[in-house]
Length: 72
Image (cartoon, rainbow, N blue to C red):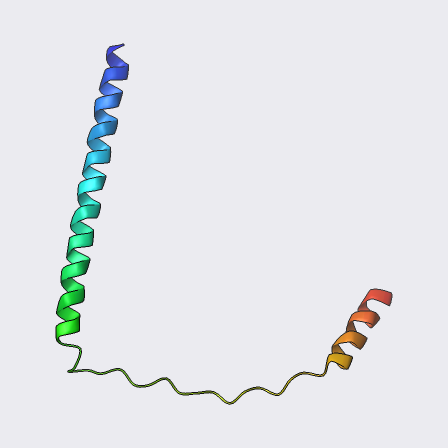
């Protein structure tokens, strides 16, 4: 029975450490987000370049290829 008690204590200690680490990680991420937002005007991001739409592939050629593969 003592081993089960030690296992539970070790499990709770491990889960507590992981929980504390995640809380610290979230707080650090929020602080960093605020810091980056404060200085974002220094290096603004470029607007994304728009790509020209691609020409639609011929459906007949695709159907013919599928039939040829299925029969061959």
